[in-house]
View 1 (spheres, rainbow over the protein chains, first blue to last red):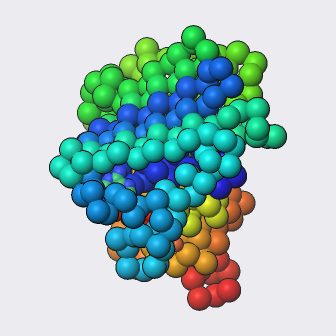
View 2: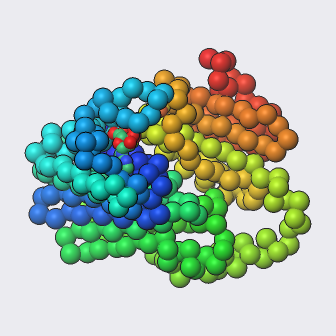
Length: 180
Length: 123
Ligand SMILES: Nc1ncnc2c1ncn2[C@@H]1O[C@H](COP(=O)(O)OP(=O)(O)O)[C@@H](O)[C@H]1O
Ligand code: FES
Ligand SMILES: [Mg+2]
């Protein structure tokens, strides 16, 4: 993947498949470390499956024999000298956490978080994005947005387009000139 | 800077439109579905999704919805886009990029003509 924002989208897709009703995504850049976590309240995985899930030959899908989303994300983190962990409990949910050492990546690694976030918007699931750089933070909570929308679907193209611009502006202001 | 407070104005505008349109419109919804599993994302599905959303929003195509779906089972042909127009057969476009998305939007969604060059099986 060219951007970590694309990996985030891919990992969050697992939460969609796991029928989560809430996914919390945190992105934090602090002290030369970029830490990303994706946490859901979906079906979860049992212990045996969880142990195999970082192995690229594990997947529940039938059209392709290898699952690659999680192994790709793990490898991306570990090649920067960062770390990766996944916790999961059947019937409770799953949390994936990866950290990246910023200095050891030559190009801006994160990419366009706003473009990723808006592709996930939907009526039957909520997302909370917490974006932090140093001590500046911005939270995007689709539950609050839906309250404001008063029944207008959050995935209407006009709304998606607006929210994308809103996210871009807020993220830029949190970045304060830093390109992540 | 745009904020959640701006949503009310957009909502009011959209609500007025929904009240005005007659009920048959609701059943005439066109759907553009973009495959967004690992292969799709890696092949460039995200900019394709965003291009369609921006085009629909810009052109005010109020009866068109853009949604994402998981794996469509044809990794090598990603990004894949399915177009569902009421009363017509599903059309599957493959190896779509933002430029092709623009063409598909203008010629097929707006113009009603399938862009056969990008349809599955035509490559
Ligand atoms: N958040 C999650 N909740 C439940 N199951 C998950 C979750 N994330 C991953 N899995 C399981 O692990 C498998 C492998 O995931 P992944 O590496 O992303 O590959 P893929 O999504 O292509 O199968 C998934 O098919 C799914 O069964
Ligand atoms: S796994 Fe490749 S398209 Fe689904
Ligand atoms: Mg996956």
